[in-house]
Structure formats: structure tokens, C-alpha cells
Amino acid sequence: MRDALRIGVLAVQGNFREHVAMLRRLRADVVEVRKPEQLEGLDGLVVPGGESTAIGRLVHVSGLEEPLARFEGPLLGTCAGMILFDRRHLGFLDVEVARNAYGRQVASFEANVDLAGEEPIRGVFIRAPRVEDVGTDVEVLGRLDDEPVLVRQGRVLAASFHPELTDDTRVHEKFLEIVREAVHVRA
Ligand code: GLN
Image (cartoon, rainbow, N blue to C red; front, side):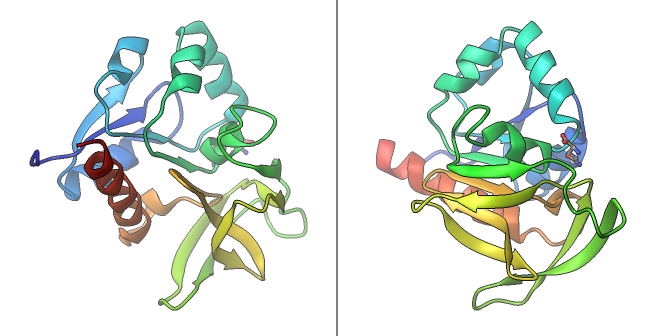
């Protein structure tokens, strides 16, 4: 087996730097992705938070739309990244998401996310998407007040909060575990 997993972080807009730093801390070989050819040879890809409309537009003008839609490796999407994975966008995740929809709360807040059988994780929510419907193939791994905020569908992991903004590396470790399994199956 190769030593380091090669992980791309979509770096057209948003807080990709924090993902890069966290993945490097976890000893991944990280590539900032701004052009289609940078998707080649990746073991996994992260789509960060930011502004989903801006990311979508920049993905389009960079010629990344089709190569991204064809990407077959594991994916981690946070916040805006989760929005881009949903039914209405790339369709990687069978979820219905409402943007900026934590209406009764201030637009940004921190709260504990309940994880089944584990210590809660501190979630930083920044104008976060609200998951309003999940398909039957979607596994809910984390909840805030009973609503899904961390979900998995096969190779796709997505959080409506920002795990890259705290010191807790568990979401990224989980993602690297999914990547490692996929690399194993391919080998
Ligand atoms: N509100 C942003 C959107 O709708 C997402 C916010 C974020 O990624 N922090 O795209």
C-alpha cells in the first residue's frame, strides 16, 4: 500500500485552507484543485464550505463541472459542499437541503452534534443548510436537536457544519477511513 492518501480539496472559493491544513495534519498528501487535470489520480475529494452559488459558478467556468460529476472516489462535503452534493445539484447525496435555513437561530452558532455511540462533536454552523429530507440510502451519523447534520451515503460524507474549524479531527478521520477502504477495494 502507498504511504499517504492523495486527497484533493476544491479550492475555487470558501474555506478550503482549513481543510488542507487538517488533512495535512492527518498525513494526507493534499492537492488544491482548481483545474480539471488536478482531479486525476486523487483517492478522495473535499468540497468545502463557502458560498454554494459562487462555488457552483466557479466550478462551471473552470471546466470542472463534468469531471466533478464523473469523480468516482469518496467525497466529503461541508456546508456549501453539502448543498452542491444534494439532489438539486450534483446528486451525489439523496437529500433535500434548504439553504440558510436555521431561521430561528442567529445565522451562525456553535452547538454540540450528537453522534451515535460516541462523544458529541462541537459543530460550528455558519449560515448552514438544513437537511429537510433524506432518502432511504442515507445514513444519519450526527444530529442537532434530532435533525440530520452529518450524513453518509456510501462513498459520500457530508456535514452541514464546519469540522475543519475546530481541533476535533474525527469527521476528517472518518472520511480518510472511507477513502482507505475504497483504495483497498481498488487494489
Ligand atoms: N450559506 C452558504 C450557502 O448557501 C453556505 C454557508 C457555508 O458554507 N458556510 O451556500
